[in-house]
Amino acid sequence: MGGTNNSHRRRAAAASDRVELDVGGSIFVASSTTLASSSAYFERLFSEEWHPAAGGRDGSIFADPDDDASDESGPATARRATTATRVFVDQDPAPFAVLLSYMRLRHVAFEDLMDPAVLLQADFLGMDGLLAAVKCLAYCNLRPSFDGTDE
Image (cartoon, rainbow, N blue to C red):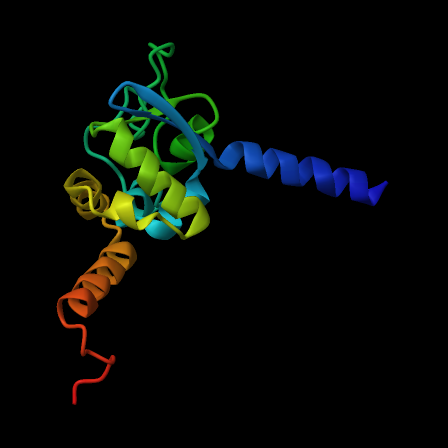
């Protein structure tokens, strides 16, 4: 009986972590944990310490087109809103799809990294780990004799 209650809690927690993203008119669904773990942009967006000055009508970062009259505000509303609203990201969806796949799998095809739009969007989203790996890869390819040491 306790296991059933725990599984209900896990499902509820997973549902509250779910975020719908409208990226350039395309809808993506991911967990806020996945997004925040690889992107400084999303880490700040979902942070309890960040209070937007001009977010949705309820003071949250989430715009809910079906909610015209909400009097709640603050981070609790933002967390609650993730289950029922979309976050708008004004970027192109094709590069975002590549980056979301990277956030989930920690892997991206080399050909996808050669697309300047993917790299620019990674920079916009604050994906410093991915960008550092790309820079290292580029440096190693430009200097084939480089063995990873400074000597």
